[in-house]
Image (cartoon, rainbow, N blue to C red):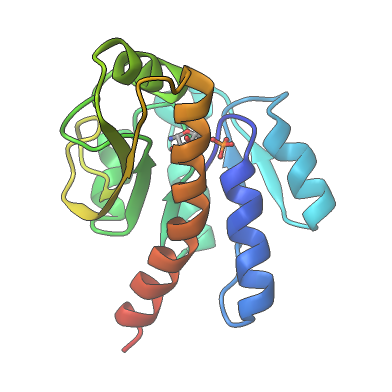
Length: 185
Ligand code: GRF
């Protein structure tokens, strides 16, 4: 599930195209004009758009997910909170990547550039990524994996973002692969 550019989606898709045994069943997005849809078109991956009504006022998205019956639901820059009914239907099967070292810089409103701006503002000497399970609260599920990267005082917000993105591309597909392979014995 993704809301934005989808560079992680593309990176994950390319990784598994090479790997060969794991496939993306579909990409779901809450933004009609999200660039992730263009990427899916090029990558030959099904993409589905839904609005608030389908998502949280009805069971349409829940039922769609049940129909797809994925081994894992991967959030990659998906910005809406996951409704409790979806969390409960897919307990332990929804993961997210957060572009900071949780529990720092988590919670509502802490996404994308906002995170890197805060890291810069605070003059942190490192940032990183957190891959975690999704529960009922933003960025509070159990942590699966973290990796940090050193920051220089001279790093701009864009440079911090780039460093963090590099970590995302390197690790997210591998962690997804590990979770899927472990769960299948
Ligand atoms: C990533 O930094 C991810 O950690 C965060 O949202 C961003 C999505 O970027 N949750 P992209 O859409 O994959 O390019």
